[in-house]
Length: 387
Image (cartoon, rainbow, N blue to C red; front, side):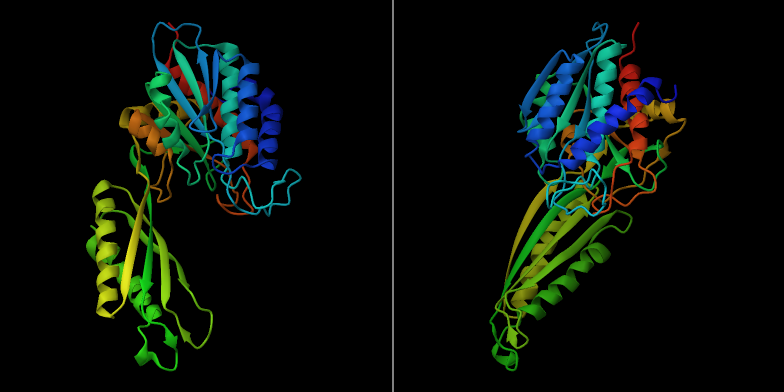
């Protein structure tokens, strides 16, 4: 079945919702306006139950089918939060909030799931229950984990759960997916190096923290090249090198390094922390300095379960005629927490030839709305068939 005609009719309305969300971005858990609009629309559509405040500002809508004999419950999730980026699109509906922007398309994700919810409440052509999940704080706040810890899966009896993200560079309306590990685990580290500061003209009287930190940065490149299995994917990046002095003639007493580790399996993830600590601490000791490492675990690897990936791919093929194999992604995605609790899958939908996500000139492509809405409805109806 191709794009559903109802979404062609609803496109101007759904686009208006999306652009309103875009103009009023909210960060992390501060999605009060967005969540309030979502909850009211779900009530207006006729959802059987609407619950606010799950995981902070998350919203859940329950839609029961024409029949419920199957007893099956399928969860569909969209994220609502924006990023701390200053928008540079020049659009007439550009962000009205300085330093905040929907630079990842969560405004589009929210609008598409709302459109699907409206259709599903109108038709109810399924046997079972659809739970639509609107999540805050995907961008670094772990909103998916917070909703799960708040009892999302058990409270609503969810058996399987699905997510979707737009993908720039893929033609509008095309889909891609992969089974197994898909998005990477995202850990962070901070290394505080302490030496002996002093005059740059007398380095022999100092313990130069910039030299020590530079050696640590260089040595950390060997974690990927010499410690990790070369057939596995891993990224170790130092992204910040900060000293306490900006003077030309001062050797600083302290240097702080910060960065990220991205891995796609548990074995590599466990390798990174002890290797970073060993390298930093022992190199610092060799120079007469000290290094303290703080290692912070972030999102886990997002893993699509095989059976549910096949279900999602079939629904995508029903809508677009095809579903490509997606590449591995070293970015993180906190839908991983939901997939740790229930089987499910995460799929990508094409956003066309647009700027990449997290770029100040990015914009969600409204032409993708009918395909995204149709996918959600097709997936629900295929997983919960009538009769």
